Structures are given as structure tokens and as C-alpha cells.
Length: 259
Image (cartoon, rainbow, N blue to C red; front, side, top):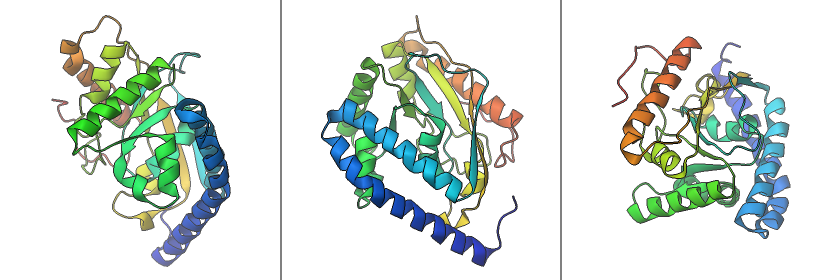
């Protein structure tokens, strides 16, 4: 769908934000109740509440979401999911893409938003990248979640990809954790969030399709810490090639080295 003309787009965005807040206020009491059941049981319940929240909101804002499986995740297998990151909408897409409870790694700044921040803190693992101690704590929590056989999600670019390349350079963290815990990596592409909401402004929001693509898993058994760079480059190359194959709309230039 073509972008709406600006005045209508602003009205549409305000409508979408109002709906988002109204649904958030409706589910908030249930989040508070669920939070008393601890990090694992309570966190899983809160995740399911967020799934319901998204399932109501997305149709009402006329976004049609579809998951595409080049290879389906194995049942009863925990993964480290890694996804590209290019839009504010990516946060909402997490629960449309991953239907079973997982824990995403997210920036601590969003936890300061009233009400939403409370839900955010209970549903994900926050990280303050400016603090080495906080980064270490976040890694410890992610590993403990994996030991409970719950998958985690990391955006290895760390922040929005504001380039015209398929991806920004990846941080090592997700790949180091994968090797240390022997957890397979499952790459996922978020293909349309850039078109639905540009990273420059919330008021670029517009209706249309949304696709998430699950790629083949990358095993980590038998790898050692010295293999971190090779693993990172392997996943980077796979995701980069597939973003080009699917003709992701932000790509204007060719491949870049993954370091």
C-alpha cells in the first residue's frame, strides 16, 4: 500500500497510538497479577498477555502479519534468535513473530516510560550498554533463561540500521553466549517494519503487510570461544544474502564485510 498523504498519516498514527495505549491500560492489571509469579512463570504469562495485546492491535491498525518458515523451529528446542533491527515497530513485532514465550534483550531506556516501561521490564531482559557491570548482569540472566529451556532474542546490530546496507556490523554477545551454552542460533528477518514505520519518526507509520522469515538454524555444538568471529560472520552472511534475495526495501548498496 502506498504511503498515506501526510495529514491522513498523522491522523492514522494518532489513532494507532491511542489504540495501543487503550489496550495497554486494559491488560495492565493482568500484567501486575502475573508479575507476582516470578521471573519465569510470571514472565511467560506476561509474554502471552503481550501476544494477545498484539493480536488485537495489529488488525485494528490494518497491518497484515505473516510468518514465513524456510525452516521451522524444532519443538522443545530453545534457540538464540537473532533478528535485524530497523524500526520502532520491531518491538511490537516480537510477539507477532515469536508466538511462544521467549526473552528479548532490549535497551534499558524504554523501561523509563510510564506503565509501558513496567510491562517492558517484566517481559524482557534490559541492558545498559554504557555499564560493563550491567552488561555482565544481562548476560548472566540470558544464560539462566536458556538453562530453563526458554529461547532468547537478540538484535545483534545493537541499534537501528540507519544505513543503506542490508545490515550493520554485529556485536559478539549473542554468538559468544551461543557457543558458551551450546545453543543453536536461529536467524529471523523482519522484512517490512522499515516500510511500516521508518526509524526517523513515529509519524511515518502506515498500514500494509508485515513479514517475518525464519531461516535455517546454525548449530554451535563443538565450537569454542575462538570460533565466535567465524560464527558471527556465518550468520551475518546468511542474513545478508537472504535480505537481498527478499529485496528488503532499505537496501540501496551492496554487501559490506561482517568484520
